[in-house]
Length: 458
Image (cartoon, rainbow, N blue to C red; front, top):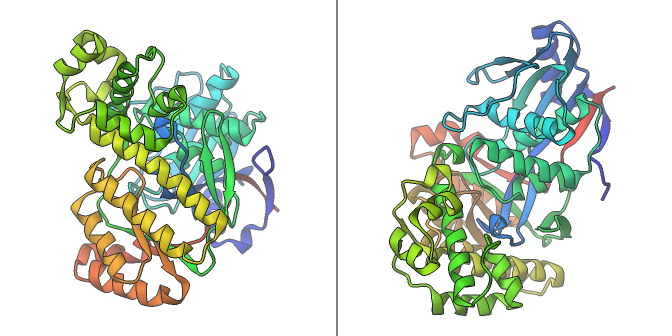
């Protein structure tokens, strides 16, 4: 795997989207783009809501992506526009500090997160003038990481425009950190696969240190993505950060019970590592230490020996201050069991036993049930869609991404793909006029795609 994001010569005429982006840019700004940047979306095959707990995940990049056409200017401003007229254009001065309004998460704030991350990394006091036109075909708010792809694309654009150089790993880490400016406390999976992906293979992503290992998916199956057509914007909701906080508090509780110095512990993986325990041992510990009933603020403070003020400032996030009860047992049980499923999934892919498709399908199904019942990050429409996918011939199906809406990913035998697509279309999309109108962008096969890159037009 090459260290730095590739810079590729590309024939624009061979790519319809790039050709349209090039023509629109020239028509709108009266000049040619200096370069193009691309960052893919992703589908997580297994390993949901565990990256921010320090555990490995197993995503693949998808062929849908974010494109940016970029030119430098002497205007002293950054002009940012979207080829989709639904998204408002903005212009901001290069001399002003970039401010991200996390209470009002507009599309361009994700781009500005990436700009700000590179600016701070290199201590750039004044950014060069830029003209950027964006075209994305990752369905928004669908759990396919359209927002993180935009952050990554912006980071790559800003690096190139300022003639800087960073490795893929460094870019992924910066983009994971700077996306938190908009209020989402993610763990880095989305940004890591966006930069570290390679065409034709899924990746096991490990953290601390960040690294990616090829995972060969079984022959004879494809992965089908289906959107339940319920949108969920992570930054506009507290659902995601509540789960982060619950895992953080559970970490403290488990460390306290084992007499560990919990001061620096914020991730469930840290407790496991400190104890040198197996994931099965950690599930036993969860049963012993945590009770299934929700914990009140008062009980948490009493067990941890902290004040209510300390709970608010040290463990809660800005948009979870209103929460009064926390489900610690359920969240920790999901995380440790899901982490075990990821390792089992990779082992099956590596060993390729005769029943590998059945084994992988079972793991995906178990993952969805855990997300639904323990992590409570599904929704009725997603559960209905997953059920339809299984009845339509999928070997396994599960929600992918943050949840509370968005997409399911299904592993489907190659010889059943057409009948599967038709069955899902008839059972889920066609009976509802709104879904039927979105079906072409909502139900598709995707192969493992490549990572982020700079394109220079030939």
